[in-house]
Image (cartoon, rainbow, N blue to C red; front, side):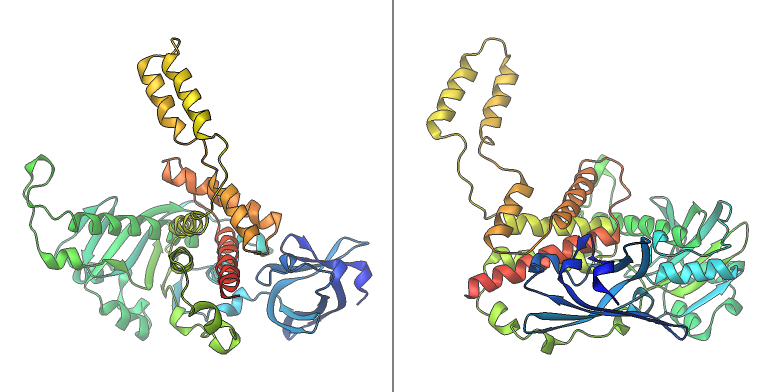
Length: 440
């Protein structure tokens, strides 16, 4: 394939100028695959984010030739050899056990694509009709919680096994043996009602509400008083304060109007291919030489951003990582001590402000030399020689806006998983490059 007639991008970064070899192979029996080589002397390391999507476009007709993800990379001298394949989300996680009923064939295909991690703009199914708005009943088994009767809390209900299994739609003949055994192994379930068009959206909305209810239970159990607000008597058991209620990795879902739905295993993380430590040759040299606390805490927060269940909480963890990483940055003073004294005298003597306004101005004086978090982050990234692009930093700004909306009570649907993963990659890179700089 002529490299001069094709545009090659990793994420939003054009690396065409560095491509020395390019080949795309497509056949009926397999997903399209691309192999290419980059001259690393032409492409700065900051342009080569191997986790970003790879796209190849034929320039003259502006026709997409390939879109996919890098599956392997090998550096030989100054040449970086890459292999990429389309639709890796379909094989990243094994298909978990699922028993669907009443589902149209195309919606079932869409469901599998969404469960594989693809977003709506990453696939197109000809003939797929958007279903009517429907009311869904969604059920999740719960670890670490028990109840003998139905309990309503925060817009959801918690039921014991006997109540759930007595419901007509949860008949045993809907369950595969493996799922029947899995659901029978739990004592308590949370039932959530939501309105949605797609069943996948219903499950996501219900999960968020169920997790919120569990969070309230965990908070209440740790209140640790026997006379609550209004002197309401409460029972105290130490075992309650130690319990951690959590959703199990199963879900049952049914649309009331159409009757369609599924009972499925929601996660197969334990089945994922394990990471290979031998692929990290500098692991010992970088991370066993006594890292400073700021990098340890940054890494821990990034890990929480990786393992979290919801993008909102993952984004909050990511910004904890940014705080830890950028918090040690020293910045020169904009206002000297003498400048601040002069300003303070002027504020105290001012007659056009009332006492509250002057007191607030005195408080603000403490922030005169403070710099924005993103300014400090960029300064440390540059100082630690961490490669990053303007596009990646732009992603962080969007994540910051979402985080601020969350913590200040403004409505937000949260960032996309793609955006959070972009932030995770940059902060992960920051930890590794900073550790390498310390080890030198």
